[in-house]
Image (cartoon, rainbow, N blue to C red; front, side, top):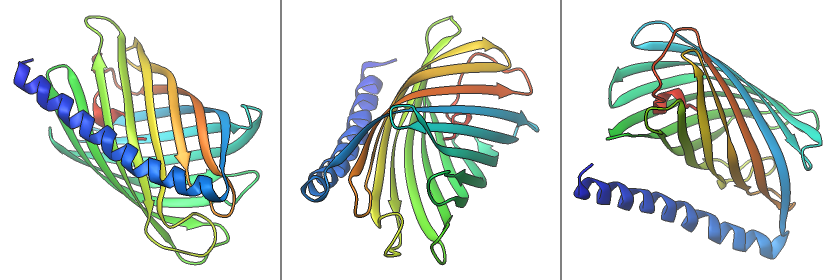
Length: 248
């Protein structure tokens, strides 16, 4: 990697982090004046199976269990089915359906589509991902549109089965219903994981995720999460995680 390219990547990464911080800090300050912040230790556990149909198409089924209240209560069960279409090495499109079952809250159906812009900088695999969701929220009439921007990164650790990966994401609700999710900026997430290629069909990732989420009429959420991902593919793949392998 040339010095000039390294400087460009570093500056771009700084810009992303600064943008996330500028979005999150004013929201945390304002919300703290009203209701304070609710801190929690959680565990998010995801299992995904991907079937590459050919060199351009793939299908994925994802299940996730999320535990809250210091990892003592099942808070959400999430099922996601989606397809990904690769148009080039620098552009792809994903679309699918997500269902969220909340034993202690409203359930949710989310049809969504996402633009994926992968890039390769020497050994760093990154992508910019912009998702559009039409949330069907139990108890609310109509749809609640939401936009998410996600910056994803991964890097193989030499000639080993190990790699590092993570992402930063911000989410915005585009309508006000007077109840349920807040309008405008909703949440920010930051995560970093260590990954292990168990074989050419499976990977294991373990790491840390932080979530800050605005809430309506109650304390905002500030969650520290133990993040576990178990990923399978039906066809063998080389040891090189790509950004479009890490749709969240």
